[in-house]
Image: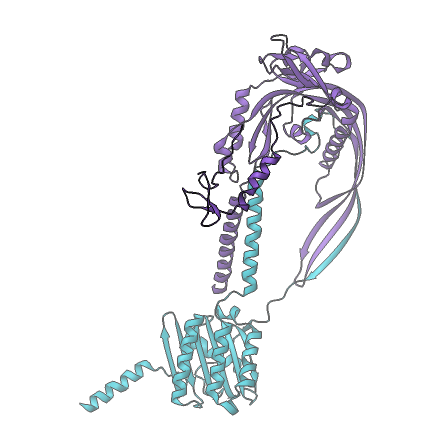
Length: 262
Length: 360
């Protein structure tokens, strides 16, 4: 009886835990339209830290209304998907394998050894998050994590947690105060136009412009009409290039953000 | 002999000196007064004088010379009443019997108008157009509409100077045309510059300028245009039943305004011949008038007056065409409320749109 219960428990655990890359603690969940995943292949987080971080990823997914993938690997080997050998493509192809190409999502990779053998952190956005997470915001988040939550002194949980917090501030849809002022400024202009039109209904007395009503019919006679070309000038302005925020994965997905060595 | 009684200021009862309190006391309301307080009665008695009912009958002052020259009085042929008008009154109404009176001296010699456009529309039409004028005006105070009280409505023949002229014009403009194209790296804009010259002539007939200082110029110009085809040779009989003033602004004074209007229309007419350009800027304009003629005419106008919040509002209707004009008051409270509402609603819609764009 005990044996049967143990087997049933193991099966139940297997149903809730999905393993993609070989062997490591990979936890994922789906809530509504979006899911979140933590792959601690490097095993630098304690189980308690993983649970805590998973809670933060759940919150991040709900707040930003997107998928979230945080991956922590020792190096770029052992991938169960094809990629072009770079750390950025690794995480992007990993995400595409789990959630699909250009599906709304945030993806974070920390690897202790990237294609150049250096420690690397990458923070990217795709789908709607590609516009919401700019390259500069990604850089700010990475710099803050590296400078103020360095894993060598604070541990990797603190490092990942600071990235999750940074993404939670930068990514959710919000309209800055200046745009609020702009919206009401436009409202004032629209109101002024409408009120001026309504007020003009009340004013019907004014001096006449000209005497067009008293022109003698057929009296207009144009005796000279010359249109003389003088010269021309040509000006040019550079066309805006595609935003450098966009990067493409080897799978064809489009991403914003970037990575840093530290 | 006259007697005096100290009356209580509070209840008019007779005051008596109360020896216990050494004051005057009213036995009815028990109010007490110091003797000093009622001393004033004795003072008033000293200053009182006897009645004097003589009147000073030197009322009024003499007319000044200027005032005398501005006034005229006429005798009504129906009732003999004296009608007082000013020096320009040409047709009026007796205030005693309502008889219409025409002052024939105002039409002697050069003062006789050449033309008149008789009234085509009556007083009832003027009232109807006034009511229509008030409709559909969102910012008009409701009280103004509801009260709908016209203080006065009169049909007036307004003196106008009519100007005919031919205008010769030379005009030069600077104009531009633009062309745009792009390649993969740049957007290009080519601007071509042209010098435009136009010359020619144009004629104007019967440009009206009102010849009365009592008629606001903007009001009289607002009821235009008049159709001169309805004009007839002037006869005083047309004035009967209406008011009229002869001119007090002569043709020389009016010609400036006529010239201004003719020049504006000449410039506009030639500007309309310059087409196909992105921008047209006048560089030089010369308008020369010749063959100028002036005529004097009476044009029909219905004038209506009303008062609202101690402010007079004057309305005018073209007595020939029925065009009705007149400025109306604004309901300031409603103006600001509606402005705030539109600002809030449109601002909120735009803000919501910005927020949705972030989500999409």
